[in-house]
Image 1 (cartoon, one colour):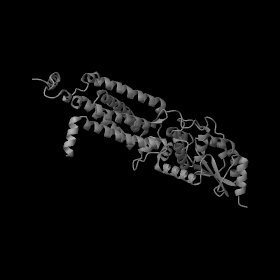
Image 2 (cartoon, one colour):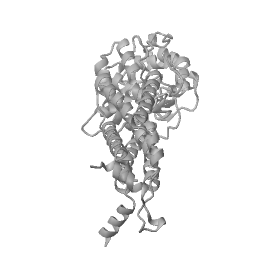
Image 3 (tube, chains in turn brown, orange):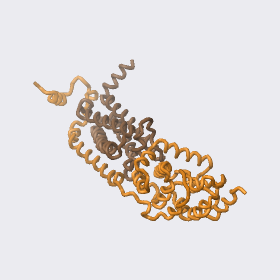
Image 4 (cartoon, chains in turn blue, purple):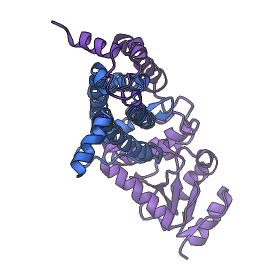
Amino acid sequence: MPRQTEAVVAARNPRLRPGLLLAALDVVGLVVATYLSTVELQGELPYCGPLHGCETVALSEYSRIAGVPVAVFGVLLSLSLLTLAIAWIRSGRLPLLAAHYALSLVGVVFEVYFTYLEVVVIGAMCVWCVTYGLSLVARFAIALWIWVRRDSFA
Amino acid sequence: MTTANQRRARNRRRPDPVLPRRHRPQPVEPTRGRLFSLPLISAIAAVGGALLIAVAVITGGRAQPAAGPASQGAPVAGLFAGLPSSGYVLGKADAPVTIDLYEDFQCPACRRWGESVFPSLARGELASGQAKLVFHNFPFIGPESTIAARAAHAAAKQGQFWDLWSALYANQGPENAGTITAAKLTDLAGALGMDPARFASDMASSGAGMAVNASVADARRLNVDSTPTLIVGGRPLLGASYAELSAAIANAAPD
């Protein structure tokens, strides 16, 4: 009875489903940021397929902060968010959820700035960056939704 | 009529007497949860994001004036006068001896080679038509090496590779420290008389990436593992002085 077992587990831990959704998006962000970081640190350019914006964005001076590729910060952010999501699923401690919400908001604020740079200053869009940005916005929105309904997940 | 919150609060005060204590629903830090107000967290996070943007603007995104080719002098630039060049080739196309030069634009030894050996070579064997110099990208020091190699490709497409070669070494900075960026190279290309828009487009093209990768693969096939590496008439040059290079050219020249 796998369906029943699932239902029992979900009933025992109401945080499981929303938490796993958060964790899954964190993994998506982690994979994208890890690919971009690896490519950047090797001095290569990300594969863009028919879309050529990635190369232009990667070659721009805005692709680094204090000499460190922006994607490396994305890896650290996604890794932190994934850790927080898993810890929240297990413990239900609100500070962990609050930290996930706050960190994802930091990322969203920076993502808005970076998208502005891509569109207005650099004049090219990187599909990898857009994917990461969308996953970040989704993570922020889900964390906010969970926070608003946090009593249901206690 | 009671609200959901009032009902919830009442339930908290009167736990279900039927359930044993260990099975009763445990409130998860309800009081601590209230300490974290959404506006406060959001404000702190927004400030954090703004600080990150400030760091990015100060350290990464700030546009810096490109170093012009003559800002520190370009001692070898005048040597090109009168020398034919095409793409990566400097000297007469039908010169009997080919000198293959593998370099990384961040390599200090390459800059020193350009200052110490190249002037004699340009005035001597290149000017006389005894030899021609063929440049090959071998970026291995870091990401900025790859960007410079792409710039070399873009400059070669406009027939001004050797101008860029001279300017890059004349303005060489510390390795991977922000000296070489696409924006600065584009400005430099403009200062050297190239079409900046075309240069930027060529530099970012997948063709540039493939050309650089092919050059690196070619170098590795020839066991090139350091820069500058010179191959004269198909044989690696072991010495680094002009005298040794000149002797190698003489040996490679057909009788």
